[in-house]
Length: 214
Image (cartoon, rainbow, N blue to C red; front, side, top):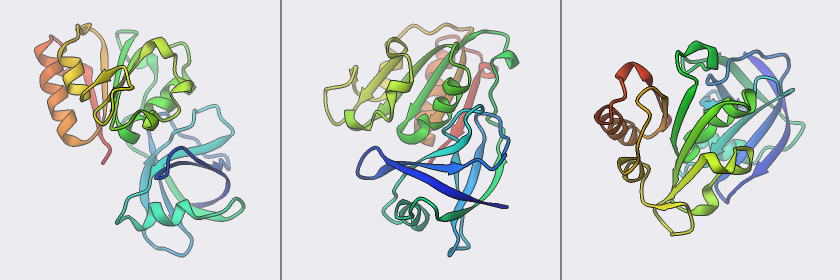
């Protein structure tokens, strides 16, 4: 365990924010997560690293949970304060050279976009397609960091995205390259449905990688 000072808190919506911390030399592979907790609480919570491997800081994307003590406490900390950090952990590691195909399909719901943000910051020349599902358009967390033509925003609460409906509804209508490496990050229901849709479209189970995010 180490202690890291807060550099900044960037509020994206009323309930979602990016916490930027001093890196303190921590090494990680994009796709891994770290455990965070305020000094005064024993409890910690896991968050995927949102920043890139080459950034000189650590960032995590956090959604404030109504009954969640950690997300509420972290939101109200100030730059200069310290928090406890453990890690990195996890097997959702990513490097393009690990895969036989150079085509990637990223599918996320909500803050499940976090590891994909790290993927693209670390490897900006990736041949990727991102499908991101949220309720409202303003929850398209920092899509400006992705190539616009490679992103499809699916919204269920308004019609201002690229597709009105769930990510599963959208992908059901699309052609999928059977050789693409498919990464899923979000709620378990979405991941299970996506497995069924992708395999029905000819994608091998060995080409599907998932991380249940909440």
